[in-house]
Length: 175
Image (cartoon, rainbow, N blue to C red):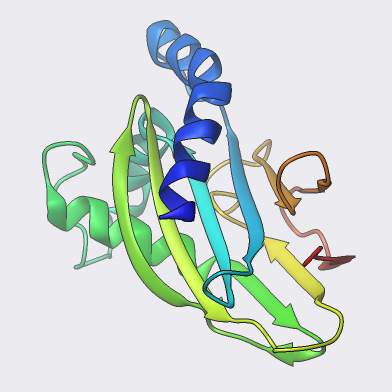
């Protein structure tokens, strides 16, 4: 429930950006991932936002040699959307308190001009939430790709920025 409310707020804040990119018809070459702790569920929730136009162009590029991708239609083809969501989860590396974590895939959906991919993992019951992340989503497609990772939500957010080949970065996730 809190994830959906947070998603709606995020979508409202970012809607002008998504609409502008779609209207112009070119790649934005930017993704935004948000990592937040949900104290009610005890989970760390990860939301990746990728412009649909960028995702579809990436599918065309990646289609050669990838049997998972049948057609580059994120909106009309659930298979394409799920194939791209799997790609997103593979290109996002995540460590929690020094341990490599593979967050569970929760699902994906289209909101406005963006594809949202959801993941989650249990948070330790106590102690710090020290994260080490690296977002390389679409950096294998475009050299100028920029990926922003927001740690936290509300007024307590730190942003990490990644480009192709960047090393992982660390930050604390507020509880």
